[in-house]
Image (cartoon, rainbow, N blue to C red):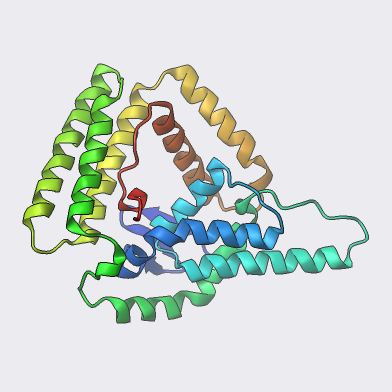
Length: 266
């Protein structure tokens, strides 16, 4: 039976008609989502392999979709269980798994299998409070926003990009001031605002990037994605490629990510 497609809109992914949006559960998992996936993949592979830019982009898509960490880890385990079973029966040594995208289909199947349970867990955990163990203390958030504002100010950009970045800097500093004055912090609302600011940043960087740079980045993304095209849906491939381009554009200009996920935990 054909699996339903994963569709993306401004609020998140719809998978099998189930909506996965940013919730308090995903906020709690900000700091361990990437590292646990990386560790599980390396553990099941049996040797250390640093994840590629495309692998990190795929993880970010799963996180932004609100896909539970449990589903991703189960998908990785299921994919490697099948791999290990085939290798045990094969007389010829099976090619080593060299990318997280190889597990993408299994992750999507795990999402479908766990969707009802995930919805129930999210509903029971949404109590409207901000727990101190989440690490989102007001002052730390404010300092993080101001740090990003400072890094954006120092960037060498085209006049068009600089104008947009200046408006983002002003907004980040305004948010930092609001957080210090507010008795409570709605991290979900703040994350949505930061997402909009990031989208503006990505858009202007793409618009003002040199043509040769964009062609080169797209060619690189196409090469690295080639082995996984048969294992990933078209929508997912498109999203991974876009995340790859965004990441590379930021790295080339020493610009920060704005999401709260990238605020280091101390």
